Image (tube, rainbow, N blue to C red; front, side, top):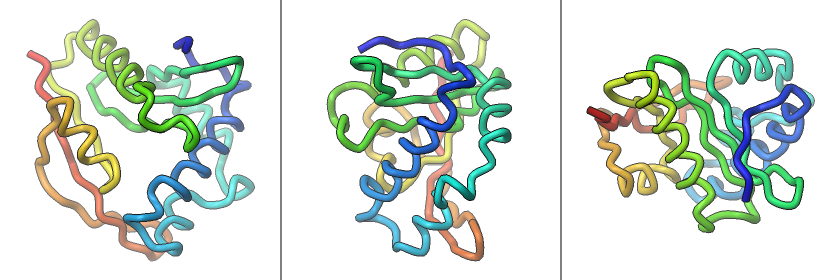
Length: 156
């Protein structure tokens, strides 16, 4: 596996990975309507907006055999926005490697703690690596309410 920085040409492949992962990996914790609201069809996603967000944050890509198998991003204040691994590459240490690198970036930026909003599915993963639940939330997306968890990890 190779980790590298995000490039604009990655955006559509990342959006496809996001869609496929949410609709398969998260399907046991959310309804079809919730999944569709969270990860709409690729044609409905604002690729320019995603690209802008990825460029404004520290976004990294995990590749294997020239295929994107995961990605994650964090901003300079320690907000970890996204961390997704391809549905066919789950439980192979990819998320852990991406998380390690995002945490190292935050430490380099002298961030004192990381905040993320974890899905029900990912909550156990984050807890395993030292993140603690601050509160359970109901987030509205396209008139659907999704449960997630505001989580924090102290870096100091």
